[in-house]
Image 1: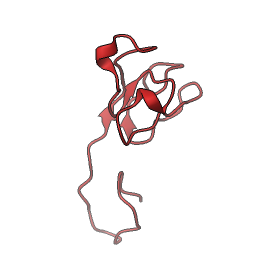
Image 2: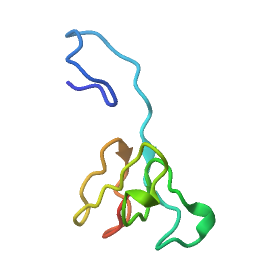
Image 3: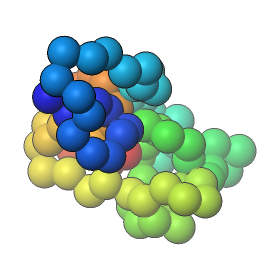
Length: 80
């Protein structure tokens, strides 16, 4: 099975260390509070990639879509 955060297929029967997934949480919305922006990994609510820290993109989801690399369900209608 795939190892979160890793590329390749690995070796059957072997275990690999992986990054722990961050829980989803709302830090800000529509630029408020400004101190919450740019948003970090698994933080929302973003409206575009510019709301996110360098190297991150805004995952605009529909309903309760799973956010890649993050744990938890988050808030309905919010993007991370």
